[in-house]
Length: 504
Image 1: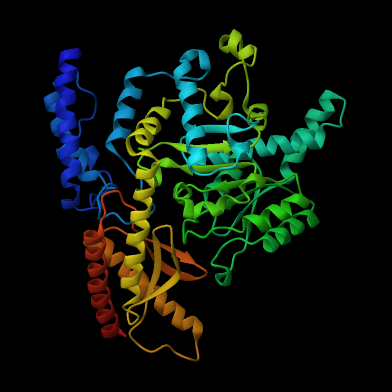
Image 2: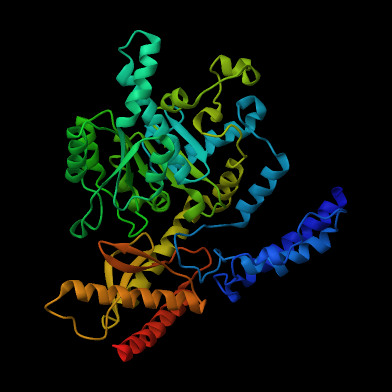
């Protein structure tokens, strides 16, 4: 493909992409293909001779699109959003064209320097404390996901703990043996509602994991006293807590953990690295009315928000901030001779390869730069506020039908969580039986909604309750789409309750 052929193909691709976005709401939101569908449509091996782009492009709609779940559809109200925008797409296009692996500054200075600048921009927009800005001992780095960020900082936390615990040993071999032998006693912590990525990171880091219990009376947010109790229990068992994931916006309910109480506990246990996972809800900190959540963040070691969830930046763009970048580089820096250069050797530049697990990295800051310049802070605030308003409206509709629905936690960060009420009166003699009936009915409604394919939702289990989650933060969703979704939920709930009553 030469330059002229590329331009022709690119124009055709852009036209197809724009048409896809313009009509995505008309497609079934969740793919209903069967496992292995694509293998039946594609040949057993690559073509021996090259094909024309016009022939390749036909297969996008014919073979690939049927196997897509349409995350950009306004009927996609599941998980958390994976927001996209045209400026973000343009950033990806330029990134692919420049194609810089960018493992150190000398590879392409603009890649490193733009990343530092845009992460400082976002730190200021989110009102993050100055200790996370590049002018301090800390700074920001773009990771692939919040899960990747957790693995990265957990490894840094593990090595920081072990270095501190063994630094008094003068003999190098004895110190090395002690460093590795103590690893088996290390424990990473996260609340019951923390994302599963913390437990997975513990598996990768080769350490243990313990969860901190949460309670409905505290909106399922982790509290300082319960964190302290788990720490003390671990110590009593001869284990060493070294890391905690706290959350700003849990997956199940968007709860915000007790940052003040958690920081107070860590003051008594300074060996524990405190990380805030704000993967989704952290985007809302761009609005001043949510910036009170940053009050105690300066007491934490690291913080992460995904711009690719709720801030119009195509996947992947996870903004990780650390208070002391040396903690990352001490754990992750290895400099073979072929990576040495005068600028790095003199400490004049940032080499982001030492802030992450992989060596190479893409030019992801371009899309953040394009998005922030296109929308501006005010545009991004309006975007977030619109979704919050849609959530409040949707929650009011749910509350208007107390005969059908019960809201489990207060709507937060454009998330509404509710259950389905059984049509029969509750059995006063058996609370567990009532809960089981409600769980069964809620699950049946949830499955019927997704089977119908008009909208897509996700479910969760919170404190023994099976719940349905509706996220009103899709880029293309408006009041009409949310009202249609509510009407679908009501109709299917009525149908399922009628069927359920008939069988009981």
